[in-house]
Image (tube, rainbow, N blue to C red):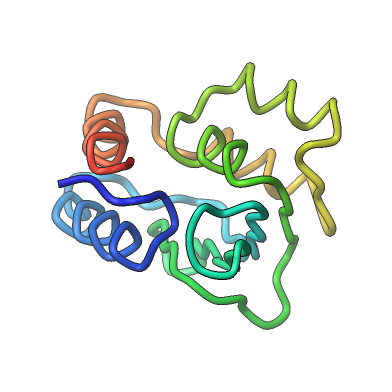
Length: 135
């Protein structure tokens, strides 16, 4: 079953996928706390605030903002989906360079995160399952 990206149902389903694979994925060595603001969301009031936190070794994404983030990423809904679900580096760079992704805070931390996230078959399996549940 697919869910709209960043909906409460999608967050719960994606969390379930990550938890199911948690034992098979190495910890993320970079500790970072990111607030995400997605604009133009096709449900609710049109804006979703979420966060990503790797401070406990895994990648945790949930709804709501966190206090004292390392950085805040603000972008439109489609670009957020490309960034977090499709994980297309070329599209992400193009969106950043064209101003569709705005970052407040220490941008070097997000670059370190991108370099440290495991890129093996196990991580790709998790990403593929998350893409499969995303409408």
